[in-house]
Image (cartoon, rainbow, N blue to C red):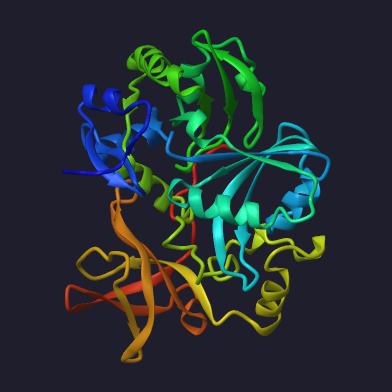
Length: 367
């Protein structure tokens, strides 16, 4: 028997034919009609995801700004009210605790959205780092459900259910109190698919009704319910990192290729000394994108071989539905990271040719 936590939409997923799997301790749909069909729906029309398993921690108090600024690598001084920022959160050695989104309400209040599998670990780390800061930490994960409506037609669908000025809401901004289908929500223009879209935060008891309203309105637009399977292929094509794969306690943000979100000029923060030293000395490893030029699909943990020796490991590998190619991401020795570099992936005991290509693999038109 599968053991795991259920989101408020568990019964809804069964109703829609979701194939349930355990993911990060949660029971979630890996697919409904099929990963390829759901993937293409999000790229061309729209898909609706249950992301209620994600964690939410509120930081409130006079020292909220100082606390969060010390906690993360990005510079939250650049945030204005109702703006969102992506950032890694590091240990003192530069390894990654998690990557998260910061929603700024004011200098004295922030909402941190964290990865589901890391909620307990992140919470302990946040409490440990509270120290002398005059703040209150509130873990709202169990009191919050979240839907992600993603795809080029997302705005057209959601605008049928709210009077909020969605057309004016720019990427990585949020509206804190929005009525959607008669339910009070927080709506942000964010997502994890490489497409335009919205994430809708609500009370757990409102999630099923919101799901049904969105699906009902979206039917004429070609909206499909979408599962974890296509969520992974979509984020992979956009080269968005997945914690435990491209980021981990053993892989720094600089090695992962997201150094843009590490602001070493903002002053001291957790991991700043280690990351500054890593940058000064030069990276020994880098996450690269590659295309399989031989036959086969590379999977996570497969060895990467060059010059007759092991030079790294695949972090994510998949067939790309949008590009119709077998592609991957791998953490390799820096000397093998240049675009055009050739190496081999060991796939089920056989060495298959691959080549480093630019990231991201897919980028949407427009914004």
